[in-house]
Image (cartoon, rainbow over all chains, first blue to last red; front, side, top):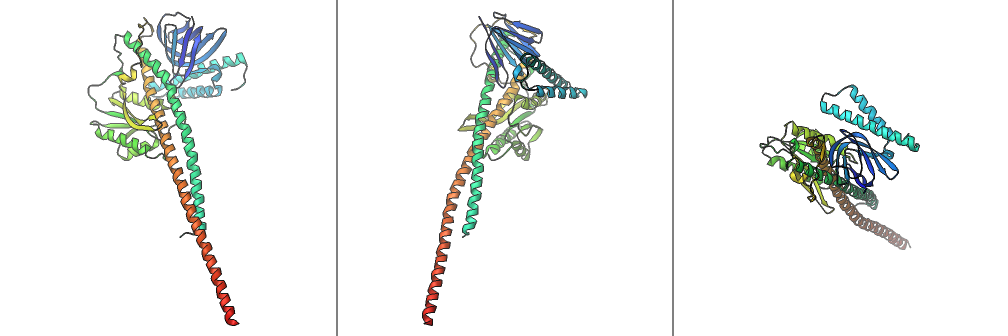
Length: 143
Length: 297
């Protein structure tokens, strides 16, 4: 009995289909989800999400969000989500540098600080996921 | 009567104008389609988020409580996010939406302030005495949620810290390619229909485990849903804008074609006339010459 996984962002459906297992960066820790998992509602932290279908593993960089697991359905409402091979390393790198730069002069409001920190985390995850993908499959682009 | 040469010059310039309006027409048509597709692409998230909210609501005793859902008993100030176009060449699109916003402002019994997305609406409402607290123009050509996030964030903040008690979205709704209309919709506090799932899931609610508590999940989801509303409104407004522009440009193209026909006609007439008068001149000259010769003989 396979799991049905949906990864959606406000802008598009990133993934929709049957999978064997997903590993999710929950805010309380990484969750490995197999079929017949107990119902869970959880928030997510920026991190990598792995999808296993047969012998293939796909990686996604997730920028936080919420997950709803019930009845063999895993629904991920992500703030952002990209598959490893979609990530533009140059852009992620630029975003990371920008965020680091901004943190050198911390902004007045706490909210802004959180936002910048979240952006930094997101870009780091993106880079991590993208670099691992490159090492694995060689680099055709983005270098 | 203009000379044939002058008319010819005008024909040429009208033809150039027609080329431009024609190009703009087809560009606008493409953008309408793109904006529509982008609106479609936001639907799955909205649907799934609503289902999830319904589950959270059911679990926390039927009623979901969160500051973004709280209706305040007294409303002392309102905020309007006004979405318009950055450019003209779109018929009455911008003045229609600005008029709707102005009417809302006049009919409101409490002060109204504006957050504007789009230059034209900003300028129009400003000229009519609207108070603008933030402006996020110009609009990006390919908007993402990230682009409107600051505008939505500003409205959420103003609402949460009590500066305003209600936030509205004023934009041009895209009903169909043939029908768009300016509307004012409440954004905050979030409306029940915004949150209600499209169809009630009939299955019994699963006994969820929460990681962290439900309020955290609302904290993540509700601002997202608010942003999504603004994003959808912007996309619909864009689709409507380009539709208006397409129609305006098609009319301009048609007018230019008509003008070319009229001008060509007067060009031919003017040319004919000049040929006739030249012929008369030659004939008259020849006749005079003949008479002079006859007299001399």
